[in-house]
Length: 416
Image 1 (spheres, helix red, strand yellow):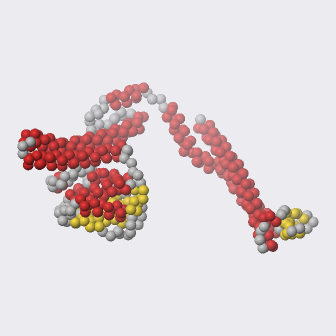
Image 2 (cartoon, rainbow, N blue to C red):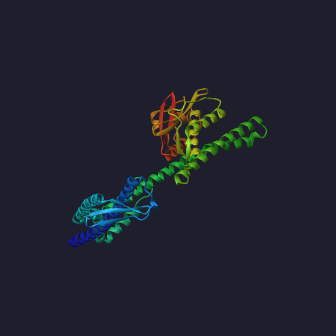
Image 3 (cartoon, rainbow, N blue to C red):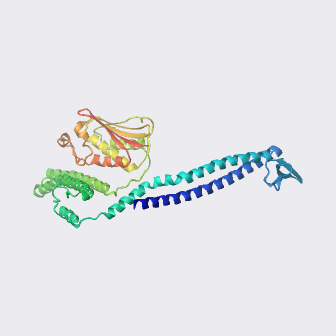
């Protein structure tokens, strides 16, 4: 059987090589013909230019004539009614010698392909031949029906609520299938756990503003109708918590669209310096409690292909975080520029800073350090997750420099 397969492979290789040699021979003939024609045309043009000072297309008939008696080739053209003869013997001798050398090299190449080409083709076909043999071996494997029953029983007896259980059959023939199923189970389990944590965290974050709103509504129902102070306090609290809940829902919807692949980018050329200047001017208007500064562009203006709305949202998230954790009248600095093949923008604050253990988790959804949770600054820990998704979609990366008690500088690097 193996001998028959080897003979069959050799026959296929010879046919493929034969077809290749025929195409190569035809291409050599075409190339030699057109190169010779081009050489003759160039010689005619150069000869007329050196004889008459210019080449005139409508000069009249032109032809070559072979003088057998003298053994010469003449190029004949007209100037008025006079026939002009130019000796072209040396040119055709050089052309014949060059063509002969080229033909010898081409013939040697064709002979080499005829002798060794089939071996090269067999070498290229070897992986396909091995794949075909493996497929035939698999098709000849006779699985015992009991193997499938054991596989079915093992899957049926698995506990979906268990966090660590894997499929185990103990059959060598089904080992590859067992490994593939276990890998699939691990990925599904990890995805399920992520979704569970996400839903749990989202429910927890939404429960707080809903409870506050419900508490103030009850208070207004009891005393707010007569007491103006209670009424104003209740309305202000409900308004604040409603805004917080609206922002949280919007962030959750953004991440949900991102996870499902429905959040798209509309890219164009974006000037990061202009973008930073816009957010800097916005910050001056909406936040008089801090001192804002705009640094000079480092390395010139940085222009990148990106979605301006998304990139501005990233910058606003960084600026909002800086405001939350920086004391009143302390400085928040914006900067943009470029270095090498990358452009950047950064936001630097003089706030509480971050511990090293918090930096490694800062982009996780709903993550907030203990200091932040106890500081009463608000927020739900989704902003940096959104910023991370946007920067990743722009093939960029973050650079974080933070010291506890001194402040934080977050830089976004984007490819030009």
